[in-house]
Amino acid sequence: VDFGPLYEAVGVFAKTANSTALKSMMAACGAKSGSLEEGVGKAKKCTKARLKALNDALYTMERGFLSHEGLPGRKWFLHVLQAPALYMGYGADPYPGIAQAMRDGDWDLASDQVKVVADRVLAAEALLRAWRPKPASAGAGGAEGGRGEDWLSLVVG
Image (tube, rainbow, N blue to C red):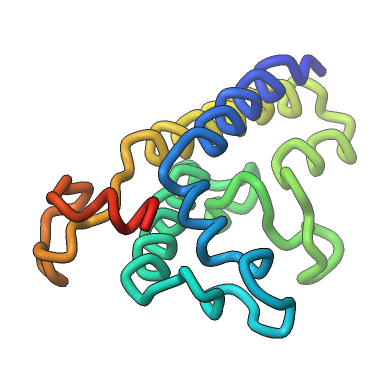
């Protein structure tokens, strides 16, 4: 099984994740900004607007990891990075389509699933790359991904 496409996709995703507004928000809202007891969202630089923007980014990006076809043999599970394992009840199975195909010895399916996962990782990367915090002036009904005059202050504060 050639994992090259998946390694490449993860590299692209990591590069984008480390160069976007999201990284600044995570630094501002992460536990590293305060004591460990404070937790995410309790750091001094983490305003409600920043925390909401961070949640919006993660929610938007997470959609990229969903496959409309679902997992092989389990079409109701759409997430390609994690799902309950087929024979473990609700035990977690990372890369479930790839892992199950390999356990079953179906190497063609495993190769196909590597390509599916790589495609979904790139889809999540594209969503992350395109994401921008909603401007505060947009309110709850503001346009997704809008760029208002104060969006940068949410990122760098």
